[in-house]
Image (cartoon, rainbow, N blue to C red; front, side, top):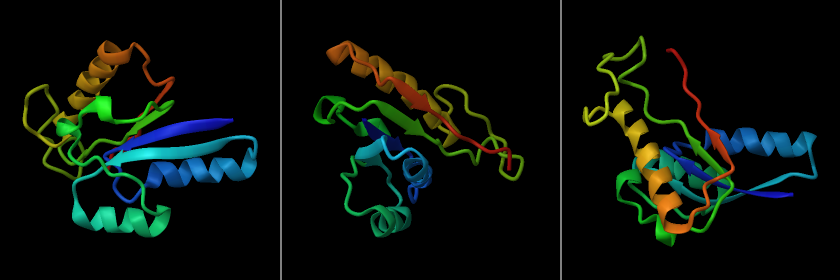
Length: 131
């Protein structure tokens, strides 16, 4: 079984790293990355060093989802600095302009994907940590 994945706010690819570990325990499952979204130069370099050259669609707020192949699994570990107890705790209200407010891009993306082809990803996977 092949599960096509898109990793938003990809960083160095921790979500794909976890999925690849699952492949070791479940060899009948293969996670195929079809793209990522990341804007920070250093994590992009790290991602490529770890996972190879996977298409980076760049700024999550500027992606034309009609140009992204269909995928089954959408991961989005959005920036959490504004929520974290170690951060500024500036919040994530819609339209707040905070980095954590980028979570609302996921709502827009899913609406755009649904409206363009009617097929949403089968699996949504979000991760965040309190610190």
